[in-house]
Image (cartoon, rainbow, N blue to C red; front, side, top):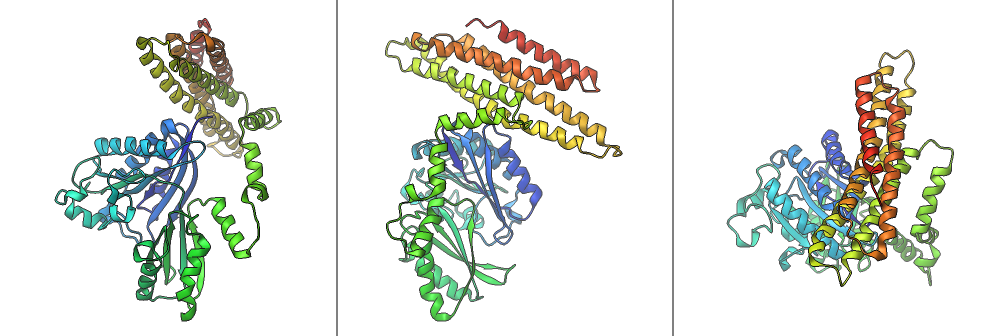
Length: 495
């Protein structure tokens, strides 16, 4: 199974939906990315995007959203309650699904270097990725915000960025790129307008003020609600839990008769943190989260690759139209790439491998990983193309746009499997060019080629059936011709 990381970039835009959607679409366009959550807040004027991506493409995805945000957001025009220094203000990589914090540190460095070099945005590495101790704390990195940093960068040696120019970007500002563990963004809305009290309370409870460990807190006034909000971040919820943070606030709220009108969890929150709150609040004795939470038990069972394979096979066997042949072809192609990677990886570990063969095998392993991610994206896209056609079919027959919508959907439904065929054919060609694999994995190498051939042939069947219904016969002929060329290329493969 590919290693994934969680990416949670924060953008200084929480009101303009068109800009937010454009940024999210930039993430979705990167192979292997799965968007999990988009949390926007008008008062904060900030959006928190959460997605997972394979380790191989996560840095590319972070670069893509940063680039799009830099094109759309001008911090000179930005006003909001949340502190910020950049259009993309903060961009953390978080380990999930077998990835490690070391993987995330590497990704932070890779993404930060490219952002600084190509976009001209100064980048500060923070938290686990920090290269100097005083940058482990995000608040210190962001001190002064956009306007304050603009005045001191280039003058203060301590504000020299890790990557990019030693000057502020005129519209996109600067940004923090880091690696961290899971945190909880927890806001508490209070039935008061007293910002002076809130300021004292925030300082009292946060770590830097001598309060609870692993807790950041800031007072914010919510114009839309006419009340104060205590905005907190639990940087280690196992050290300071949600309940403990609330209990600490109530020590000052209750004597003043200030009620909590509501709370907010921003972005995604771990099940463990919520379970901990319930167990603490109910004072449950001897509770075991690993064995007594139904969903945890189920996820462990379903998380094995055997269960995942069974779910996939069962999904193909049911009578629903999706997933169908196009998705199955993309899966076969992704499996072919994975087997090819395994063959190359095991060969590279061989003690007797000639040095002259290592660069080619290393390049093959990397390229197959990229192609695998692209093919994995085609699995869902093929199903989406069928859904788009069915939506077009539901257009009323008396609607003059019905025919054009159906033709556009058919074109899309032919182009997606054609992309699958092209990617699988390219993977087969890469494998064929670099056949220096160990004899111990020759059967896996050959199986990889057979799977890629099946992927091409399965995908092209979907090209042919959709292309033949196109009114644009010139386009149909071109699509079918390309499909046949891919079949010819893999049919010539000799395993």
